[in-house]
Image (cartoon, rainbow, N blue to C red; front, side, top):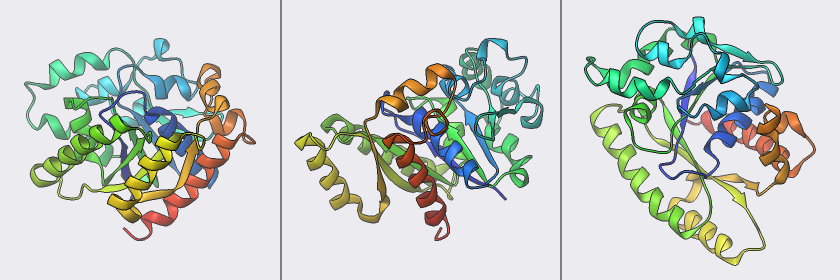
Amino acid sequence: MAKIFCIANQKGGVGKTTTAVNLAAGLAGLGLRVLLVDLDPQGNATMGSGIEKANLDNSIYQVLIGQATVKNCAQCCESSGYDVLPANRDLAGAEIELVDIDARESRLKDALAQVANDYDFILIDCPPALSLLTLNGLCAANGVIVPMQCEYFALEGLSDLVNTIKQVHANLNPDLAIIGLLRVMFDTRMTLQQQVSEQLLEHFGDKVFKTIIPRNVRLAEAPSYGLPGVAFDKSSRGAKAYLEFGVEMVERIKHI
């Protein structure tokens, strides 16, 4: 039975998709069966996995409105060996169409239940907003991984996300919990980032992953080649950090 995790943060540009794609590749590299669900209409996780979103016959949009199954739509990321449930701009229309559907917040949960035995991990890359799509991701997940930059405004956004997760836990998904906070785009030369990192450790303790993802040019370049960073340049500091994070993630869920 797959462990299902959302990669979520209501703030944009904090490395959610980079984390989702590279964690999927890192876990697949450990021999685990992984499905990456692209729940963002921008389709960046799809493109970053080498899948051309403009050429999709079926996507997560068809899955959510009941016209296709996950098995029909999933494609393989050939460079890294994980499967992708792809997305494109059609997904933006799903929010409008789901409004009048019963149990609209659990459409993704029901769809993933059909393939839960086919994977060890299912990772959901959520859009940077508390929308009906994000709500579907949170309702389907066992836990949330929160990538965040160590900056002041990131702390502000984190409190909003924690409150959202508490509300979903109380009302819709009692299994939902924060699995951990991942410090990304970290620059050791910046005093402020070190201070915010210390604040995170002080307030969240062992909820903060030990792995720190450094700011890295090679990670930023990888999506333009349709590759996860860990496949684009395994020797880069960013790729090595994400591979370490994959190992830490496997260890952490043993205790959940």
